[in-house]
Length: 418
Ligand SMILES: Nc1nc2c(c(=O)[nH]1)N[C@H]1C(S)=C(S)[C@@H](COP(=O)(O)OP(=O)(O)OC[C@H]3O[C@@H](n4cnc5c(N)ncnc54)[C@H](O)[C@@H]3O)O[C@H]1N2
Ligand code: MOO
Image (cartoon, rainbow, N blue to C red):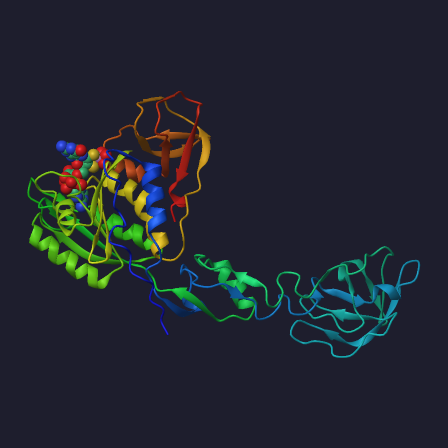
């Protein structure tokens, strides 16, 4: 039976009355508090589970390793049966190999040929490395001093049957799939992949590859946003370009709300005459034009359209990317069942100087070179080449800051936003 989570509340994005500029951290705290998973659970074969969000804890059905075994190729024996001095042990007939257990018992004072991964036969608790042994006439000799249980791996030393192998809400990695397989689990409970509609708005936009008149620009946000969505592990649904026409946009939202879990639009987010995204969300009555104390990305329109959350991102590509990484990414992670995750950041020396005014958070396109964070030469919000140049963001706090080269600043690599 598929379990359908309850719908989000219509006032998810409501701001308290009288709030003017919302600090970034406050906006993030509100999102974190109000959102919840919106996707149903399903079952996935291991082979298809990479990047999916685990919907329930997974218990080990079997210990890893299931039996005590040898970590090396060599000879196995009971440590307690060794006398004083350099041991000389007769070999029993047969051998123990991985997948081909020796079912007999090795008598005290005897040794058996054993290969890496083989279960330890009865009577064996210690293995001597073959390189440390002289073998002749069905006997082995080696130096005294080997420790009990040397070169062996205990049953369940990695994980024991019944223990939790994988916790719920993980985004499954290749190593997680190995662990599930090792403990006998072949199907995993996962959340259905979050579906995210990507829409561009604006009369000036044309499709890359088409002829563009002088006043027109190519739609750069849609390929970027769809790729970001895919990178986050969700399913982008391309709903194309919509002109600055409220009816057309309404139709696109209606269609999206029946097909997807989240809508990402870019453009028309502020409150100009042609800013139809914010106007429509306002009209729907569940919209807050979040004037966030942030550069770039000040106008972010957040609203609900027929129960589906809409992130109305600013049109400037740099602002669209920053707002997606800072707001939409953690919010979508909650909607997808993976919970809220702040990106990993690092304090690094600045390779630049800047006088920052107080009153808003700033994100600069940045990259690490020679152990310092360099920033892009321009802060222009339409400078897409700087996004491509950058390998991460430098985050400057809400207060005033005078940054000199060598001062410590917060660097967030793009790789942290996954
Ligand atoms: N009077 C004010 N004007 C503006 C303000 C303001 O507070 N008061 N804020 C500025 C800031 S900051 C931003 S960011 C933009 C955001 O505005 P919109 O979200 O309404 O975006 P548009 O006006 O539609 O577009 C802005 C800019 O981005 C270009 N664009 C839009 N979509 C795409 C796309 N898919 N690919 C490439 N480029 C795109 C568009 O052509 C504009 O140049 O508002 C400022 N104005
Ligand atoms: O969001 Mo605008 O500059 O802050 O591009």
